[in-house]
Image (cartoon, rainbow, N blue to C red; front, side, top):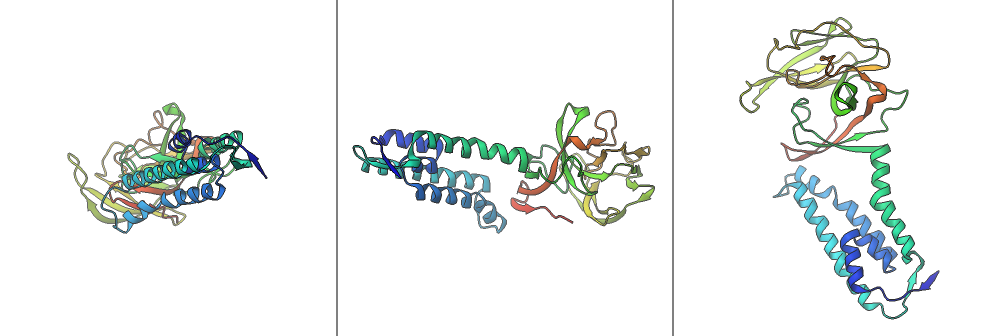
Length: 303
């Protein structure tokens, strides 16, 4: 079904393309297949710079390359939409989806609705502001958390890197590793994690050299009772929270530690951090989109 509309003014079309993108403007000028094509191209381009950086094929930062690609697509859409609008004259026949209210609905769905649904129910982006999860996550890393991984009755597994809001920190979100489940007895003894009175397996690895003034850290591979393993780092076995009391994890709550054991605010500090209620969980680490130090795409190693 088509309807007659007045001419799409080229200047207005170019402005719409600049503000809302080429897919929306192609709907506005009645070019549905082009709208779909621009949408597919945009989605295809998003991971391309990170993949190129992963294979060391990119001479500049992946984030910069992604922004340049998106700007290029936007400008191509401006020129393309303008040229189509120039060719439309008088009361040109335009497809039904070019009506203003359909285009406005598309703007709401693709510009606001889909990101809102994605962020609320599927994935949420995070940026790592500190070194508390080194060597697993580095300061400046960009990552996505899977929000559907946990529910009102399904909590994290031991070893999950989880995002959660901390009641003792006014609901501020943190990302730590879950080591204690409801009913567990957790204790640190001379830098070694004990779960239910048994030490976890620790395999010494190489040392790493962080920035001054800290001494080189010792890397360990820590293996939890369920067989999941990960890297941790320590500077000493005599730090303030390397030896603690026994923490008995309450029902419906969890115990979280940072992988950078001597430089992490976590559940060992009951008054300032404490246990993590199930209802405070946001989600589980799904993918590290951008690793700030190695400049590569890094996917979660899920045991």
